[in-house]
Image 1 (cartoon, rainbow, N blue to C red):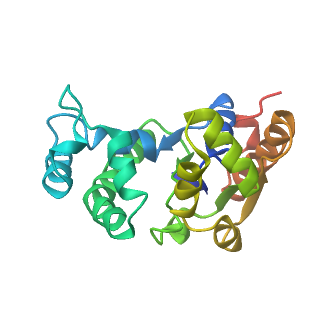
Image 2: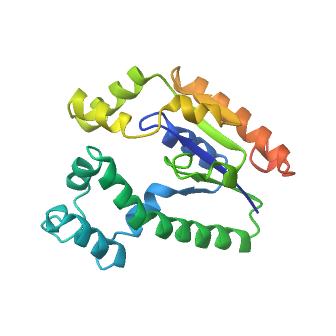
Length: 209
């Protein structure tokens, strides 16, 4: 099977595009879901995070307090590197397992949705690469509205990632989500049709009518 990449900045609209792909019955492997699985209570991943960052990143239920960890890693590049070193290989192993399972069911094409594909130097491993984009002002407004946080915290999270411009430079396809939901969906459909055809998969598999 062929796996292509879907990436972008925080609050750029990746989840919206991924949902559109899923609506056409395209399998999407979500790195965020895998990231939660590899640090679930009782996992070696969570134990390693506690050793690295202290018990203060645990909630009352002994599960990972993701906001507490985010406050640490989004304000310090060294901490982000430390966290990525703990989770990255585990996430990629989970992705490989899910891809293999999809292959066994006969799926010819799938999408790997991950915010840090470019930062992790994996863009070429998941070609064609789809980058979801919008302006920083739109990102900022979406984060503040979604998380009910401050503009300063939202901006720190945006700046903690590689600039969208750098991701656009290595993109094979770009989906701009600054417009309406309908416009984003139309562009996502165009991209999926093109990728399907390029991978030798009949687009009618995902667009039967």
